Image 1: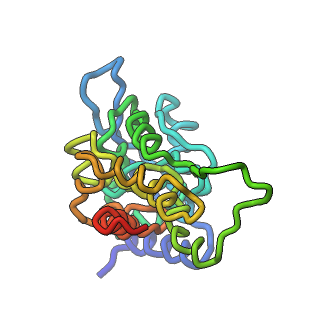
Image 2 (image 1 turned 180 degrees about the vertical axis):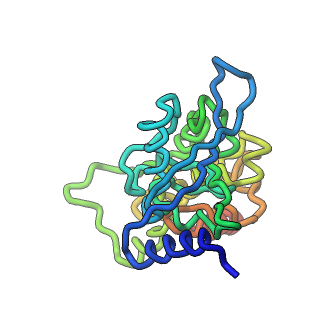
Image 3 (image 1 turned 30 degrees about the horizontal axis):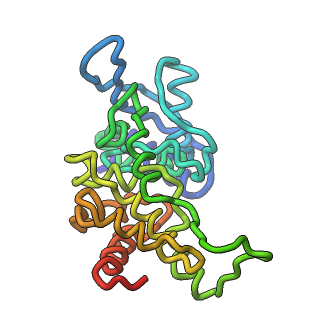
Length: 263
């Protein structure tokens, strides 16, 4: 039989689903790291009372603004566009601004919820708390030439493209460079030299663009030892993408283009 406390928490979640406002109390367990104070990270718990329909980013703001101003994390638009607040929430890569508290809270046991865990994305050096060094990630992005290369004279009008040609690479235009896919990849965890899914996705976007003339050059870049052949097809990247990009499929299409040399 449910206890009164469990009924109260269940009612709170039911209220969240229905649109009513009712707070629940839970713990936010954050992996904290300050290199100026300690050599190893530590887990710190914060007790919060919030509307479960709020975003996890709101919970982080509450900790920083009301409890501990030293907490450090990245965020900008708060609407899933900038990609700056990617982090591991309950062990999975997510955007804090797109994750509702109620979706990661789980069911209470004896009236108590398990803590929601938050830690930095893996595979990149942690600078402080939830902030990682993104330089290697962006270097891989730059290395695949993520821009249109068109030869010949400057056109007198826009370069037109058919609907079918545009659809060929439509999915990979959605990337917001949050690094959620790359930092979910076991190969990248073990070897930071691997280009990673995000770089390959952004190469795909231009390799299959009918207006571009540098597809072969990009394929050669991705044919190197740290390129596309390092992918082990675990689908972690596809599962982690907050934009729903079929990352693994894009990687396989690049592999196929390398084998057939048909773009």
